Image: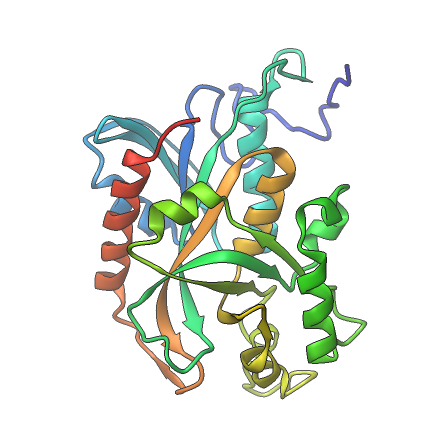
Length: 294
């Protein structure tokens, strides 16, 4: 059995994992992921009981109970790179023996739901709506660094999208990964479904033009017009593809749910979106508390 070197999985002197500063046993099987560190307390304020807290850089964690279900909420900060850190360290916390640095004989599966904010790229999707990423589309290229990438991706959908957009070959190749089916069923009654893009930046990677023009100024129009077996691409965010892809490779179940705070087609945005986020948090907590553990 492989022993993981200290340089590959760094463990702090207090026995916590390097970035998240969590120790094995402090993480619940159900994990809510948010980008904004301040949103951790917004989620945790609903908990009936708080068990522990951990904080390092942008990574804040609270573990507690909601309606009897043990849950953790963790802030990831912004971007795909931080999801790579969080997913690897969360998986290590439940599937690696920190004393021996070897994988545990019995694999533990986490349930991971990202609650984020997003911009809609279809004209009929309104600000304030909740959108469930039934499929995540990665513009980031992260998953291609991992063995097994094609095993968890929808390759036919990928090829159709590349052909439709005339994808620029020097950009990372896009990839498509489905959310966990049980999570989709749990959120079906409160969220619209869609294909959600995770971009590696906020500006040109999402088609925004401030002073530097995007490589393809028509890319968003091509994305908006894309259809595949009756489905369409609905919105932009910045983390969901890595969550979906890494969870699939690791054997966890995961999904992304977003509140729409911008309408990219109508060129509108809301900055006072907290009521929408609070509604999303309340809905997610109730559905995760009721979700069957497997």
